[in-house]
Image (spheres, helix red, strand yellow):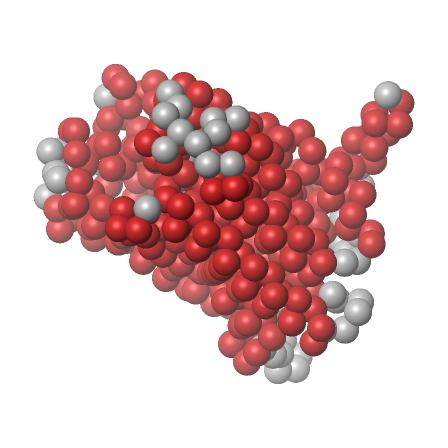
Length: 403
């Protein structure tokens, strides 16, 4: 027992105060995440738009998120990660309040796009800040702490949002907006250049010309593989719940319980596992293993067709894959950057996940509808194997110290 206690103590030690403060900012921000999860219900039940129109709005949000990733990365390298985070939080918070007042479909689409651009411009700046506040020895764990804050905040926001939405859908826009602004106030209070020595006072101009992320061919291959990985992983939150209900005949309550297992396990074990593995310097090896495990988790539904207990097995396997892959993906992209081009690299990485979040569920739903869930799970498995092979080829091309 003492050994386990020391493991967790060591896993959470050595992380800079600035990284902890940044994670707290993220927790406050994500605790108000209500509009996006309930947007479809709001549009169809309160404003009486069709499901097709609601889907179009979410598609517009996805396009805005992709643009926000690219734009946020560019602006971060130009103006610094602190300024972009602060501006994105304040402007995004105001935009949530504005969107809640819109009723016409064109106005909703325009405001949704602007909101998504602002929201996702925050992410590259945030990823760059984590890299700045961490060292090579604790960088992966610093990203994991941030992921922990996101997961906890998302859970809190979803639960509270359900309660608030059941009373008045319009209130979720106010809560989401003010938590954004509250996170901005906290960011300024604890991480402004005047209050935190780790936050640069201004963005220094590069002394020499640095490599562009768009000229880093190996990184562009990595981004493409990340999109493929994300397309398979996001089935977990889109087509899989439908399969649980229609294919395995599970109740909504049990589906919620299974989905919650993922978040609980990530929160409980990711930091300890990352702490144990990060010093071995085998980032791409872990990514490859995690990619294969995520694919395997979906294939189990075909291997044990019709068995309800396989739902629990699948979530255990996909969680193991997530813990092995995602933290070390962050470590990989940061390893190819410096202080002058980090925002651009982060912007591409953020955009990759935004693209996957749009494409993955859309394509998965079409395969499930027209070809069946069995075909979908085999497809996910095959794409995962191809993605893992791609990561392996990247590893072969990389120097051992990076691979």
